[in-house]
Length: 177
View 1: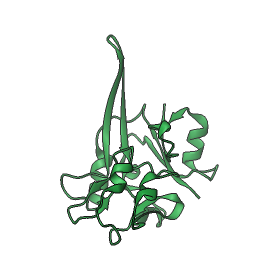
View 2: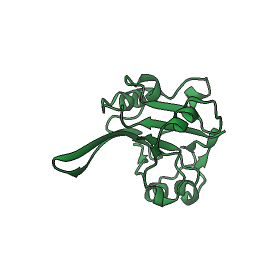
View 3: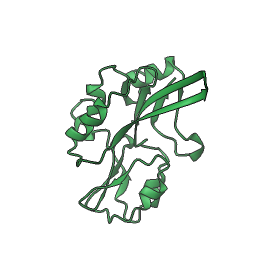
View 4: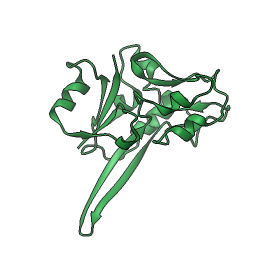
């Protein structure tokens, strides 16, 4: 089992419902976030293209944050989800420095925090909060190793990309293009 997410960059409208749902579901302190919206414009006027993406921890299969953590606070959990044990974290920021996706932050209580794919919801058979509230249904979550899962099915039908593939992290967040 390997959990992952596909995000349809053609359907995302940048409404930030995913960001608010995550903050609410996970009691993320005001001023911090585990996911965020990125707007990227490419091309030269008048031939411009804009992409809107919901970004978060990429739950990499080859996660530099896990390798760099001196206390093993950053670790792989169920389905390959990259987690942080707040009780083992010493706040040294080695994982923050090693993450090419800038997906971690120091919680005001002193430990590193990040997206968990709402593992507490997934274990109950629910989607992560961001997926559950998306008004455009642009996010697909599930077991990438299960060819019958919704996320696997959509990735078979569509072209996709990952962010910063040259980092060699083997991310488990995919953007449908």
